[in-house]
Amino acid sequence: MKRYLPRKVVHFFNSEPASGIILMVTAVLGIWLANSAMADAYFSTLSSYVAGLSVLHWINDGLMAVFFLYVGLEVKRELLTGELSSNQKRLLPCIAAIAGVVAPALIYLAFNYHDPQQIRGWAVPAATDIAFALGVLALLGSRVPTSLKVFLTALAIIDDLIAIVVIALFYTAQIQSLYLALAAGTLIALVLLNRSNVVRTLPYAILGGFMWWFVLKSGIHATLAGVALALTLPLSGKNQDTNASPLLKWEHGLSPWVAFLIVPIFGFANAGVSFAGLSWSQLGHPVVLGIAAGLFLGKQLGIFGLVWLTVKFGLVKKPERASWPQIYGVAMLCGIGFTMSLFIGALAFTDPAVQDLAKIGVFAGSVLAAILGYFILFFSAKEKP
View 1: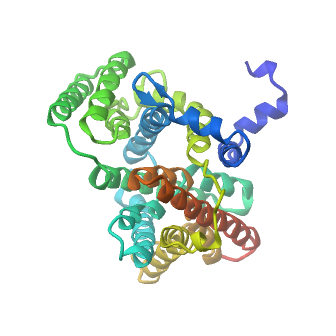
View 2: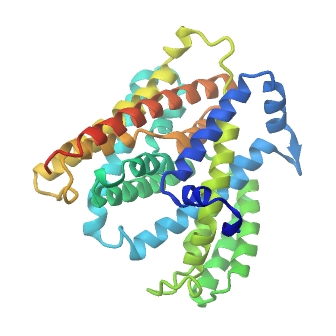
View 3: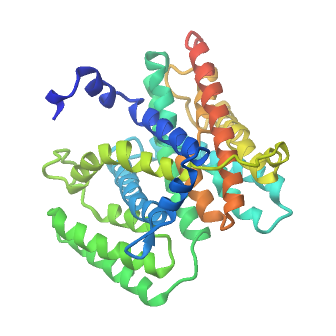
């Protein structure tokens, strides 16, 4: 296929920023359609039903289950053989990720503690969009030391893991015991396949499909089935051959689909918010302010503040060849919370009007964090570590 495509096109899709750029373009397209003459067609298509679920439901519960499957595969590989494979490697990004979840949540709650419904959005600004953040970092090329790219990747992976736990604990509907038991039984069967050293991927795929359906019907968010399936796939010890390892085979196979199809479709479908009738007073709504300030201020204060303290007290070492302004710039980039923030916002709020306010807050905080983070890293490249 590559030989039939222009060389520049192939080069673009092989570049690090490609997935982030495509996600940005599809999100802008969704916003444009939601505010154009085609708005009715855009929203009616998303709300139309196919096989018992709306198109938006299929995207958020179906396609995003594949996204979480990919995230789960990445997390497991990093924990077993990658940048999170030892306690020493995990400590700094783990500390930073926890601070980057707690600080934005506290800032959000400071704006919304008075309203029981709005409180549910506390986790919206706690997430980092790994595709966007790494995409911006890739635009800077050699201006950013490799150690900071590794640090941001590990931090974002742990951040995603925390987000998965948060969704399971705080954004789960009423539980249907029968379906939950069936899902648990399917998970046990998957674990037994792993323990029996089964490396064929078809049995995992079939049981994973059944588990997704059972989890969907159980009331727990169906995306968690993707994570559970990922954790049962064998890595085949330390063998990095993709032909021998089901986990690596699936991770490499899913990577382009997730980056260039699933996440952009999610962005296109969930970014669409109508600005018709939007007033300046709505921009000052506690939900908007809480999310925007949580992403833009909470992430940088939490991550950079705790990293600085732990390094100063000698508990951890800062990334090699990285200056403090560069670490601050990366902390700022962690305020890009697009994909996961929009996803959690859709779970946290049932009122479409509040969902739109949450989207506005996500856009505002993420754009500010991306722009300022880029320029901080651009101009700090000559700083001495």
